[in-house]
Length: 131
Image (cartoon, rainbow, N blue to C red; front, side, top):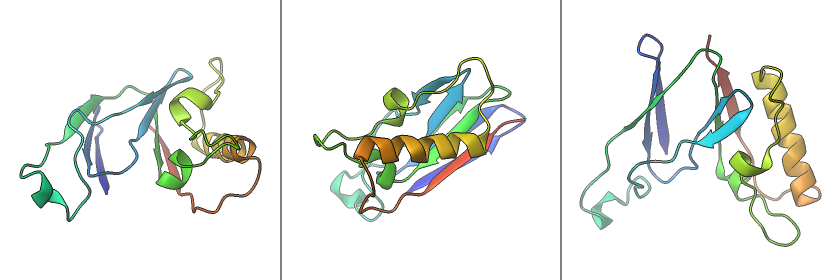
């Protein structure tokens, strides 16, 4: 599970991640994985570690785009077995703003190209642009 809260006044993203693919921050055409400071186990498995990690805070700026994906994206495989990684594989324009709908279309096209066709896993994506 992943819980994310955007604090628009403080311009921060609070993330609690319990074994979910990390969200991505897109700023000026660059993609950065918002990796948990302390990775944690999925929900229902907390007794294995005895202690749960706290939330992570990430600073936000106007016109940032947040990209949330499920494992259908990060576990998409190329014919050679290599997993798809949005932060290194997705190519975005550095000269024009990233619109959420266009980003999701580019992501779907990139994964289709990466895998060489249809996938067996479902894929859910969400893109949010900050005002």
